[in-house]
Length: 309
Ligand code: DUR
Image (cartoon, rainbow, N blue to C red; front, side, top):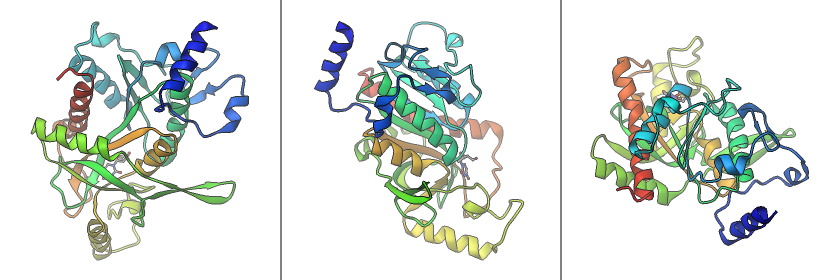
């Protein structure tokens, strides 16, 4: 059709398309994005998602719904925030909300959960012929030597050995991918934070683990095989290599976005200082306010990019 010729032409003029790195996809007549309950034959993905410029992902479905409502207000878009509906309501794996050029999606907890979501998100952006997209992970984390409530913009996402890489087992062999994030976006986010001047924000390395308890050196899980001194020594080592917070998704997030040519940033608030304890003891209201901090930062960034401030 004329429209699809035009779209191809327009795409060829821009280099910042989302690149899927899978030759098999071209041979498929239909692509079903199973965990989103979307597909290339059942949905017009370019029409539904073609104008997306910013994608925000975070662990909890409720938080990503509030983010969508918040950004709707911040961008002063027409319509009622109660009418923003979950595009993935046909499945309870992930929730997805679209507000103007912003897509807000939940990813659950941990590398396997976010990685499934990212495969389908990146294919969705590709099928929808999106270009110049920036993806943000807004989340929570444990702080390493920081006051609770501090926001960490990730410099390098590192694994539990403090290496800036993500390892995945493919066909019984380990594949290593780089976890480079977009420094330009991170620096702009820090600039946004100094403009807002609402809460402390630092840049630092983020350590990604495959467990919340023993895997993060916590002494309060159902199992614990080490002493308090062992824990503190590990956290000290992490701190000395530049780690400022610990969470469970950043390495695969950085690796997949980088491999597909998508600008990405990780912005996590710290819920506690791990040198002071393991349990999250702040009140519900304090935790809710902390979790809004990365949202406020990203909203400011988006408004600047849209020329609204
Ligand atoms: N998280 C951690 N460690 C913390 C606090 C938060 O991993 O100390 C992040 C990652 C995961 C979820 O998705 O929040 C676990 O509560």
